[in-house]
Amino acid sequence: MKSIRSANISGQSVLMRVDFNVPVKNGKVLDDFRIQRVLPTIQFLREKKAKKIILISHLGQPDIKDKNKSEFSLAPIADHLEKLIGEKIYFTATLIGKELKKEIEKLPDGSIILLENIRFYRKEHENDKNFAKELVKIADIFINEAFSVCHRKTASLYAITEFLPSYAGILLEKELINLNKVIQKPKHPLVVILGGAKIKDKIFIIEKFKDKTDYILLGGVMANTLLKANDFSIGKSLYDKEAFTQAKNLRTGKTKLFLPGDFIVLDKNNQKQIRELGKITKDDKILDIGPIACDTFSKIISKAKTVFFNGPMGKFEDTRFGDGTKVIIDAILNNQKAQTIIGGGDTLLAFKILKPEYRIQNTEYRFFSTGGGAMLKYLAGEQLPGLQALSK
Ligand code: ADP
Ligand code: MG
Image 1 (cartoon, protein in one colour):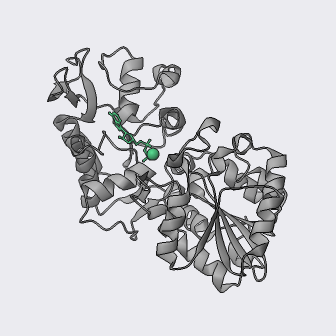
Image 2 (image 1 turned 45 degrees about the vertical axis):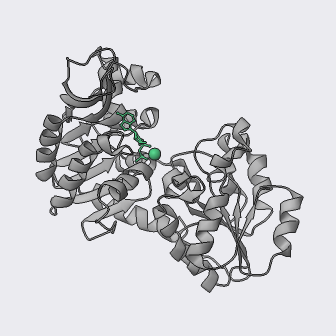
Image 3 (image 1 turned 90 degrees about the vertical axis):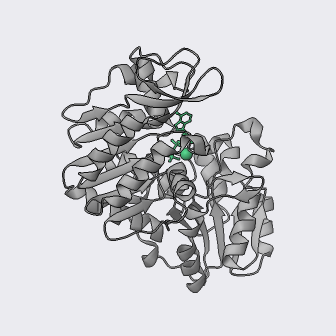
């Protein structure tokens, strides 16, 4: 993999794939962790006198028919970036074609340009070569600075590398160095905490971790799905049917897999209740793990020497259901002996909401990754297409 530091940048137009997929509400960025982490790279490119810095990102998972929906537009992110950098950020709704090329050529040297949501194009998902060829017309070199999407084989990460000299960004390198540090020789007990809502992406990770980890603690929709697939009643709780086959046939090897034995639910009168597994009624909706699960999980975390954490334990955005995730966060922060890797957009947002006094900061033994699914896959020893493309 070639490093951005070895690239000849001066006078070149640089196309950089970033991940500015951050939570946005009513046109305001709620958490800019991922944007902040790319600022040093943008600074680096400016110091090296890049002719143009063209940024590509996605936001959310829009459908083709969502193309004009403002909730998927990167416009608010351009505004936010402008405030952070203190300079004009050019934003363009056109992504490809001659028009864009003309538009960009008109801009002064050193300009930073953010393109609209790349996922508005189906060909991005399809890793379409012709689409990638269109994209590269506006640039001389490509930089992958989007570790968190490297687990997806898409045009702006994969096919694109066939048509431009391609380099790993500063943040991407930092992610790999920090993750490599823990996976090369992890100290045991190794505890993996998995929650959240993106089940299809993550459920197979459980099996990948078998025999490598000592404990896997499950919460969130991940736990719901596993329980439901194995015929436990979970009432009206959210789960992912598409992951059922995997959830039923899960082999965990030597790893001790822990599911919550109690939950916080909303009952049929919309009242918050504690419910033990086995006593969940058909109208209950699981929204957090219960106090006994919190206790069990924290004890395990307190003895860990290595911890990987991705995915909130409950619907933490509603603070009534944030306790489970907060207990896990506290247990992680209190264990200062463990090498800890924490990642995922919502997981980091949970730190911000539930632990506002804590400043998210990397230390010798704790690393906050910008990746969720990508981080898990990498930690589990999977090949990531985005990285493979850079190594070719
Ligand atoms: P990350 O972004 O950290 O990788 P995910 O995107 O997989 O995490 O999942 C985060 C989402 O999961 C949050 O929006 C949270 O509200 C949701 N969630 C977790 N547990 C539940 C639950 N029991 N019911 C509904 N939503 C849940
Ligand atoms: Mg998420």
